Length: 473
Image 1 (cartoon, rainbow, N blue to C red):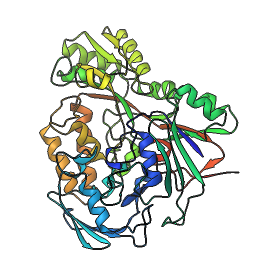
Image 2: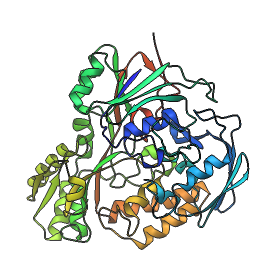
Image 3: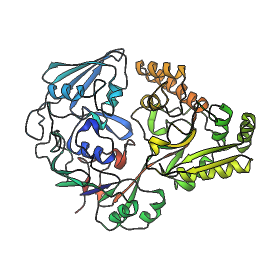
Image 4: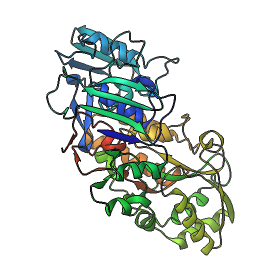
């Protein structure tokens, strides 16, 4: 079984806490386990933690760990490994890419050999789903060399060549008896999208990540391959910085929202593989966290003209790079529709190389893409939390900050939903983001391969496919 991702390089890693790319995520799920696993419909299931419980205000969690589990080197898994692995995320000097998730951690404490207790300084009802993240995989205590793998996962690491490939072979001592249908898995990358697609069509690889919407028709008409399309929270948008002109004018931003022909974007540019956006990041893929009560904003050039006239602004410049499928076409359509109402939107095309350092969060109007986060609170906190490092429109709402904290402390689902709705409404009306669409996670595979999940948090059904898929002879 050979899987081709879209990006790799010399910084590829088997150390969970520093992984940031799809190819690394796939490797983590192939060779490691976490405490908790996320399956279809964003549901949580036991992994190395057989069960967990929480106190009434979500400040203490107790995890009962699975017995009889061994690492790939044969050593026994225990509470010591969990505590060591999780403590790696703590402290200002931690290299962890998700250390912000664990800022409230006071202590991971060993109760006995297979029980740990987590104490937090502030409530966090989202902690279980945060522990499903790729970076939260458990490794053997005191590991320093991760190149051979240090996990308990379904496949061993036979060889690892950063920027080339990883070869995994079945773990004969795996603790779970479901899955592991393959003898070996090779994970590599083909960076050119056309070459990657051709490799699938010719049978050189069995599955590929990041299929362009433009290539869907070619896959559909080719025997033996098929499109994988999973509705998700992934989106493309336009940032209007709120700390400078023109985005600091609320009417200007509202005009940019009202001019979006959302239905056409999904139909024409995404080829139907997406959903209309509602100018906040929480799509229906977030399940109960999505505010279905919030009315859908629609294309209304008359209202767009009214708001733009009120702003007194008649032209603007938008920096555009192909950071996400459909975003360039969306901006061109936006320019055309604005021209019809007398507004001059200039499109400044720039390359993706260096974009996130030179343009994003710097130019007054720029395009952006955001991946889905595991919870609505995590998504809105990282992008819209007051003063956050990645608050890319520089919109700072005191009420938003209050709601982010309150929702983490609330364990009643109805009350949490009400808080999430208020946050989405605030972003929908007041922030500097224009979010016209959410795109499905698009990949492609051989029809001989089966068993991929539909988790919307990453490519190929959320990247955690290794132990569940099988291939016809």
